Image (tube, rainbow, N blue to C red):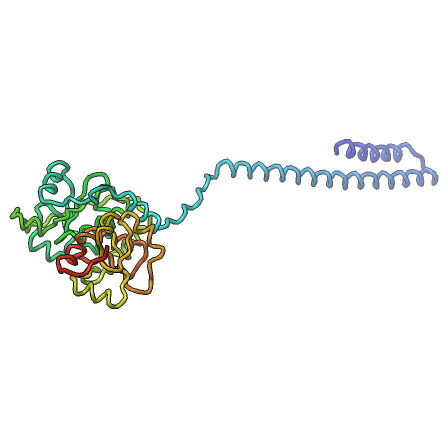
Length: 339
């Protein structure tokens, strides 16, 4: 680029020298004019080439700068994690049910409950209605009615023992499954609940206990929504077939009856027409359950039936009730059984 400008400038200088050296003759003037014209053309071409080369060089510099900027952006921009896959609520609840231990997470007797309280200093949660709690409760228990459990997860610890109770154990069993579905592996139920406590003439309190400060929990929103959607709108009666007469009426209208006891218990005798799906496999075995008629689950005493009711409800079934009296009430009434 510089050499071309130099050559053009030299040509112009040569013309100037010719003008100085030449005489006054016409021939000399013509020669000088022609030389000047050639030098001007050469200078114009050189200038055009210089501009073109400058433009090309500028484009190359701009491209290099853009490439460098892209590299810097790639290096400095933090990587974005892919969105977490949606949680399959039924699968998660099924896995939780599969892992239920012997004893079904129940502290069945007052003595078992007292021993657990003495040994572990748990949070004790009364899931009855507020008015029941205010009328009398187990000392040191906090009040979280069952329909509001999902609203208080931040105030329920995950890293220390929790025991829930109700009036008879039915709602305590449902609450245990609800909390376990949310990842609370530290929750058990006082199976005998308040009736067993008062029957044993243990002390009761009417002094309210404040809930602790909340701590945010890492709970999948899909699970929290499922539990809240199940517990929050729960109707009066808590999805409970309360007595034998109501159970018979449900069966007369085509209820699908599920015995959630173990296989051996079922084979020894069961309610006529009942299918056997043991509690731990209740979600695994629910693929063939009807969605267009009432399902009634039962066990021996009602506790496992309440657990099954909660598991199915959280997994999406809205047509399930539990026979609270279950097998004991059925046989006590002297009704027909099937083997």
